[in-house]
Image (tube, rainbow, N blue to C red; front, side, top):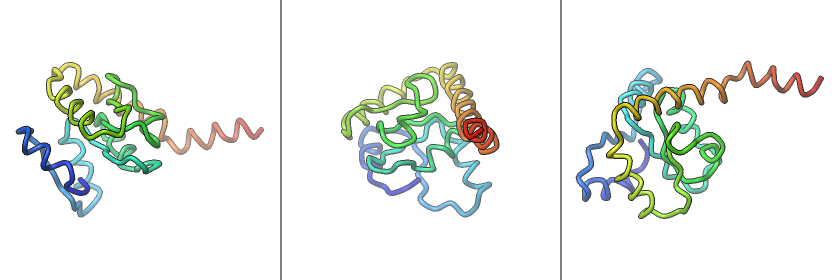
Amino acid sequence: MGDSSILEYLKKNKFKYNFQNIIQNEKELIKFYQNSDFFLNQSIQDVGPVMVNEALACGVPVISFKTGISNDVIRNNINGYLVGDFSKEKLGDLIIEISKINLKNLKKMKKNARKTAVKNFNIKKKIKDILKIIK
């Protein structure tokens, strides 16, 4: 999803991918995420983006630069991967590296991605936690 800035790299390196820039409804969005092995967040200045939360909630590991929410919730080899430098080359290298991940590890990462979302993005739990602090 998003703009097409990474497509040239993916085509050049013969990666299989599903790119979509328009989603019509929530059901379509969830299906799109769940049909993905990873969500690639290539933003370098967004404090979110909300797509990181959505991907994790759908059980999709996230690849991201160390920015925003990604830096807070993504753990390498657990629920995704973080790229330390804002470098398209390092991001590309990581994409190549994860293309070799075995299915057992991928399934584990998907489960961990969902667990991360449940733990960190449950609004009712967060409200209770805040109320405990206030009292």
